[in-house]
Image (cartoon, rainbow, N blue to C red; front, side, top):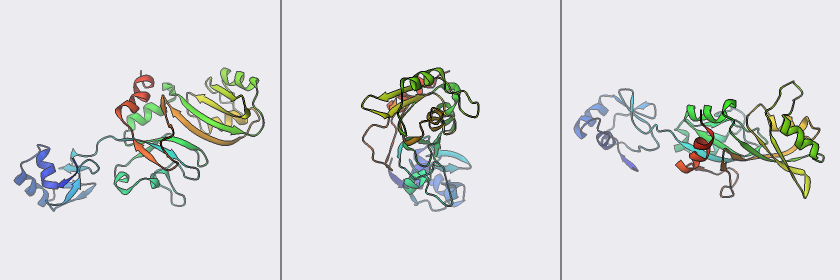
Length: 242
């Protein structure tokens, strides 16, 4: 829709005529991004701002979905007083959308991180019951062996007694300290703990796939893009089902 006058946006929504919209605005009944706006000629982008009339959303506030190439050294949080967060990588207009991370990547872990303001989507992707696939690329200290692959297939038993779901470990034929692991749940520090239980501490870790959505090579660390319906279908239609 682009940048338009507030009274026109309200009129176009069918909530009031143009003249009625002006009276509603000047009487303090219209809120823009959580604040009362009394100037009817105030110009905004209705797609990135939330407009409410008497508390009801009439424009904006829609559900949005993004993929971010999380760089190393940034925490997966909505805010942190001492450290840079993944939301600090976004421009101001997107910060108003109240996005939050879908799941968590450690500070030193890089790769594909989903951001959204859709709580149901977040729950569906992160719920252990859904068995959403997550593929990680890693390097470890030491050398991976065929026995490691077999134990991952059985389900790794962590040091605290937690039994992980069966996972898939792939070893790089040319470098046995490098490989890929596919998990179907999201326990705390799971990949690191699984490999550590085999005496192979993780050196680097990068998430490259969620569901069937791949990070690809179009983004650089710190860059992001909005997901298309086709992108979401790679996660939702194939994986998020009852």
